[in-house]
Image 1 (spheres, one colour):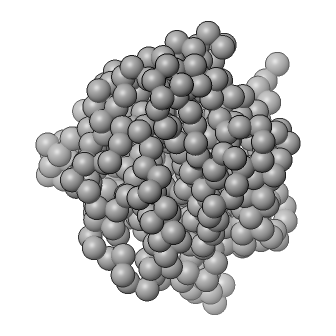
Image 2 (cartoon, one colour):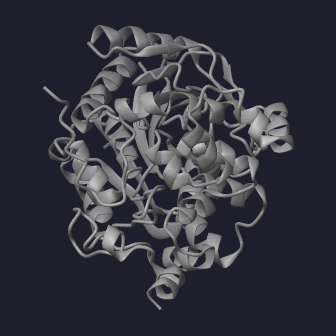
Length: 147
Length: 280
């Protein structure tokens, strides 16, 4: 019998469960290594070489190099682990979270100042909230794409 | 006998610590956060406990994927401040209370909660930000702290019900300790926030305020809420709020006095919630 996963119908949300953690084990452990200043230095000096010391998939390495946190999360990463990469880059949690939304840093910051993202339409996949797949990308990026 | 006199609940957003450490608390953006703690800082000057039992979650800091305890009690004499990647915060480390921690561990484990005993653990923003918010800048924290880490990062986290019942067991353990200590229990984390994907930045003000109401008035009913409702309504990281139920469960059965309540949107990505409840 498969495990009960009642959280699969939430838009834009990947729950870090045992299955994701298994997929992302080395990706996340690489992130943990960046808690040591000497490892942050070595990573900064040659990211590719540092990543090659870890038994991660090529896809995971590419996602880290591109700082594509959404992709990292799909590939088994978790934000609290990935935050070590962001910290190494001198990024804040707000910059990291915002980078996954397709919004510019300013758009995201303003959304938070104005009360955050609304829950309305964002509880279940298939509703019409701004986090739904058919509404991506949002903000200026979306307007540009849609002409 | 030792006694739990009050419980304190607060968000532990890392950006609050960063703003505080950089001396930015007077900036309008941060003033709106810190003003919610003015009452608390004054109150705790006259109500500093002997020991704080501080419930928080480790953010992949002390516990990597190598080892993930669901409930971990810090039994050491001291705990260092962790380097989370930005360098360690310039705040004091914790002085623990190994005797009380060992007593609680022995009592609670025999009450069927399988705690993990931790004798070496660096503490991250989950633990240090609440201390900064309540005590301000210090060379040393004014009391002993027993850090209690709960896994809310790797699903499944413990249920609200289990957290609430664990609180009961902690209360019983504290009340059976011979020394007449004044103990506070702090529940930290939350409120609504999501730090991933297209739904990042989610805030649910109505849900958060209802959570505060119910935590005060009907915690036993609130404890029945399933995980998925936290995640759906308060965001993937909003699940941290189950930790508040441990602190609430450690309070007396009689209704508590609500000394302070504060709610603000937002600091960084997160809704700020804060309560002080005192036992009658």
